[in-house]
Length: 500
Ligand code: CO
Image (cartoon, rainbow, N blue to C red; front, side, top):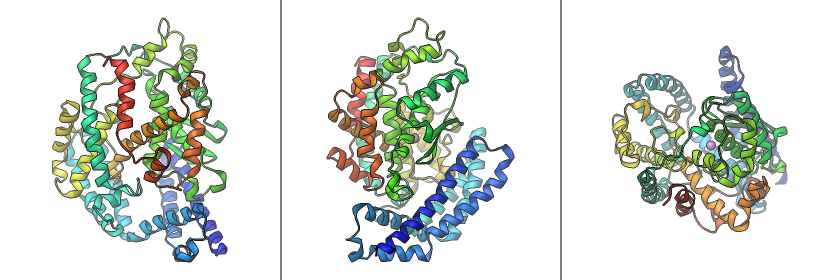
């Protein structure tokens, strides 16, 4: 049987290599590929994804999985080996369940939808995008039926991003969360306080910003010999264990986007760099889910990167990089400016408090679209009503409302909830790290981030897919995911800043 397991591992490592090539090609496409390279690249990517799909769904793979999942065999495997079999079987099942014609139809529809989404957004006209949404909803419902689900159709789709999580659980969790979050936002708004943000909007040469970000990354533990930082419109993290590619976005008028996108993506990158060499190319050597991935980026971006102790260490370096802009200012001024909270219309520009309301409303609308409670015609109205209810704002046009995100055009229904799940996981894990290391914030003041990084390495990064997200949360915190840790984090931080 060891022979079968070894052969199986060799096969999945090959598939992972192909996926690694795909990730680097995709990075290249977003960064340095010449404008007309897209034609060749789309052919290369199509060949690659077909190859990956056929290797993943091959008869040989089916046979390995059948053999290894036989009870007498499975029981003799180590927990790590069982993880590799279990998670590959899960991926295999999803891949073979959907007929190739549907996969092709979805790919074709997404391409057209993405083009028309951009057009619709530009023209502020939902009717241009609406037929694509209808088509995509229909195809995604078919896909969900082929994959199968226990409770709700939406679960089959969310499973692609947050394996094992049920929408009924998320619904209960988010409803409780919303009821506690909305009053916090109201309290902040009621104070009428808005920090002076001129300290972060004074004009900063992009080359100086780049130098600052490249200086920061290794100081928080990101290995620049196993990674790099580049610029894109939409920041992301790609690559593999020993070659982690981060991107950020620069705004010459505002210091915040580049710094916080860099720290956010570094959080993703540290997770990737934290997997174990021994598990390279297997499910034991990659992330659990998007929600857990996001928990790592959010703890670095917000809990650490937007904290006063972090800036007690980094602020002098910032002043050194931009002496003129910071003349006569203090670290406290800067801390207030980077924690400006105000309801706004655009998700990607939202602060860490109101951000979640943007996600909660998207989740509610997706649920309603899949349950049949509303259809694509009703989406703009459903959107605007919730923006009014949750954020107290009027949506002037659909480009600042229902058309602002690219996700639906890519058929990525079930993706949005992972952003807020990430914030909730982050707070629950961070609270536990603070319990284990009560002096953690003091270490940050001294520029020592290794305590937290090692803690996440040990508890999360090195475990690969050993647990599903829910199991990991119980393992680390002793409890299932709940909203109270994030709520008390927000009160603890924003109470003093806004005087409540
Ligand atoms: Co992220």
